[in-house]
Amino acid sequence: MKFDNSAALLERARQIIPGGVNSPVRAFRGVGGVPPFIVRGEGCRLYDADGNEFIDYIGSWGPLILGHRFPPVMDAIREILEVGTSFGAPTEREIELAEMIRDAAPSCEMVRLVNSGTEATMSALRVARGFTGRDLTIKFEGCYHGHVDSLLVKAGSGMATLGIADTAGVPEAFAATTIALPYNSPEALEAAFKAHGDKIAAVIVEPVVGNMGCIPPSREFLDAMVRLTRQYGSVLIFDEVMTGFRVSYGGAQEMFGIKPDMSTFGKVIGGGLPIAAYGGRAEIMNRVAPVGNIYQAGTLSGNPLAVASGLAMLRHLKSHPEVYTQIDKAAKAICDAAPKGTAVNRVGSMFTMFFCEGPVTSWDTAKGADTERFKSLHRHMLESGVYLPPSQFEAAFVGAAHDDEAIAATVEALRRFE
Ligand SMILES: *Cc1c(COP(=O)(O)O)cnc(C)c1O
Image 1 (cartoon, helix red, strand yellow):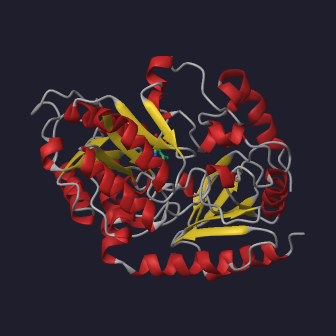
Image 2 (image 1 turned 90 degrees about the vertical axis):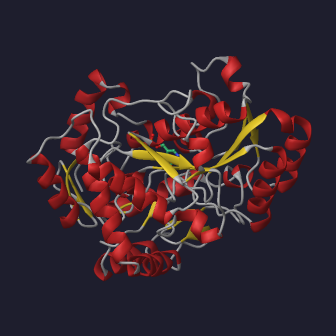
């Protein structure tokens, strides 16, 4: 496999874009010491600037549950090109998309559309603070909620990969509004509420973690979050940017039968275009401007192109519930071929093979994984034409476009790893 063209592109990119990439996790050193620069995607496959072909398990980091260039999504985008891509004025499709989100996740009685997952969590947090009149937030170590100032404390994803404990550029005072607790520890949560309960505006959580690798929540942990936020009048925010319409149509909240006060969505709901949403109980959401005095706005929020793409995606998923059984089965087949010495976590089509003994239930247990061994696996798979997340601390995604041939090739490549 050659990566000469990607190497030349990286060299040029580095002169003008920090690290040559527009999001840090893309900057991994692949087989040729460079990340493949991508020129085209089709179904479950990616094609790079050197003509290499890969089976894609990143899926744009979550959105592409139906694969690249899914025809109904492409058709919906084409339709919008005929009418205009942005009006800065309300449109009917925005109502339809918001209604589809509410119907999938009925805890969201009202919904506001924004442009990225970061914007969704940032806005949800502001609304929770405005609603409760409190400042503190509880988050969990290793969870990533976008690059919101106060949430970049002990965050997973790129920060975990690069070993950046606390980012520069966040004022001490912002970080001090965040209490970071271990994931899956009802005891730590209980203690934090006992100490600061009347000051805690919100608990924000990845209800299934993807951003320190895939980690499912324990029932006790979920129940403790619900019980304590109710008891102390705090807002429970499920960050479903990754899990929404991914672990099931109704997200993790449907899977676990929980009604959070607020939720955030992104990734899948845009069908590959930039869009996200936050929503929650009407009592809370009606505090948002122009109805209430909590301000949040966006020039391109709910833009027709992203809304149409998302609508086409959700409509297909809604009318094809068998997609979820199919991708669950495919992910299981891949996980069954995991290399010796790995602890495998999988929830539906999200999975991670951790190079450690396990069980992996928190950042403390995840960070002990052998990342060098993981790098060898990643290289071996890339050379075998399989594009996995480049970090031990990122979940892989299976989509409906992964056909039997792709799954078989992946399983075969995994079996060859030594
Ligand atoms: C990806 C992600 C975000 C951030 O979304 P962006 O669109 O990248 O800003 C927030 N929360 C979770 C759980 C995510 O996986």
